[in-house]
Length: 504
Image (cartoon, rainbow, N blue to C red; front, side):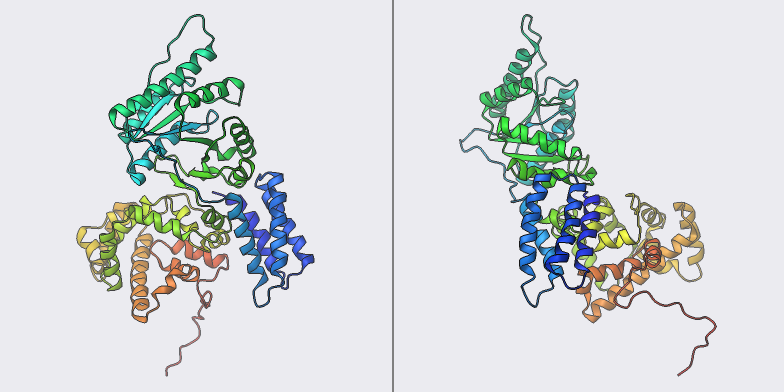
C-alpha cells in the first residue's frame, strides 16, 4: 500500500531536510520535488496545487521559529496537511431513528469496483464490531451471477440474503423493466428485514462499465423508493484518477454520504486516497485492504499519513493485536518470557497469533522506521517467511518444544538432524534457529533485569533486536551488506584471528 508514493515522497523530504540550514530559496527547490512525487502518484493536479500552497506557507513560517529543527518541522507540516487532505475521521454509519425501522445502507459504484464483496465485508464488520444483525439484498439484476455471488458470501458469513430472480415482461424496454424491478426487490427486502428482526439492510445495486443515464435512473429510483440512511460509493483505488472522476460524477448525481475505497493493498501510488475527499467533499469511510472478508478497515487519515511518510502506524498495529491475541495467553507468555522460561511451544503460539494479524510485510511497515530499514537492506517479503520456522518447530517432539535444552548436549545433534529431515530444512537452518532463540531469550532477560525493556518500543530498539530474533539470520546479513546500523554502536568490526589475545 502506497509503496511508490512512500518511496518518492520520502526521498524528496529526505533530500530537503538534509540540506543543513533551510532557507526560503532551497525550500522552493525541495518542495518542487515533493510536488513531483505527488503528481507521479496520480494525485489530481488541482489538489496538488492547493496542497503545495498550504505546505509552502506553513513551512516557510516554521523557519522563523527558533530552537526547533526546521527539517523536522517540514515533515510535520507535510504530515498535518496530508491528514487534513484526507480527513476528517468519519466512520459513522447513520442509523434509523424510528423504532422498528432498520438502518438502510445503499452501495453504488461502477462494475468491477468490488461492491458485492464489500457488501460481505461491511456486513461482517457490522456483526463483529457493532453487534448488528444485517440482511443483504441482491439488487444487482444486470451482472450475471451477481445474486449467486452474494448468496455464497452470505452463506459463508451466516448472514441471510434476500433475492428475487429477474422477471422478463414483454413490451417493456430493458431499462424500465430492470430498473423498476431492482427498486421493487429492495423495497421487498426492507419489508422482509422488518418481519425477521434484522436491524440493518445492505443494498447491493447494479453497476456499469461507465456512468450513463440508464444507471443513474435505476439508482435514483431505488433511492426514491427506499430512502436509504446511507449511500456509500465503492471505488477501485487502483484506477487512480478514473476513480476520482467517477466519484465526482456519482456525487453530483446522487449526493453520496461517503466513499469506500477497495483494493488498497494493490494501490502503490495512492492518488485516489489523496484526491477523492478533496474532489467530492465527502469523507472516506472504509478501505478494503485484501480479498478476505475481514479485510475492511476504518479509514483514519492521520494513521494513513503516517504510513505514507514511513512514520509507522503503531495504533493500528495494537488494534490488530487486540483483535486476534488472547489476552490471558499473552500475559502468560509475557510472564514466561520475562522469567526466562519461554520455550518453543510458547513461540509457536506467538507465530500462530502473528499469522492471524496479516502478512509480515504489512506489520513490519507499521513499526516506525522499519520501512526504510527493509528498503535499504533490500529485503523482499513474500508472506512465506514464517513457514520454514513453523515447519522446524512442528518437527520437534512436544518434549523438545517444552525443553529446548534437549536440543543441546550429546543427544542434541541427532535430534537436530531428525528435525531437519522432518521439516525439509537444512541442518544449518535448524542450528541457526535454536541459536537465535537462545540469544533472544538471553537478551530479553538481560533487558528485563537491567530495566531497559522500554528500548524495544523504539525504532532503534526494534532495529537492534531484529537480527537476534529467530529466523533473522538472513535479514541480519542483508542489513550488514546494506550498511544499516545494527544498533547504537553500529556493526561489530571483524576480529583479527591472527592477533593473540592478551591475558590480564
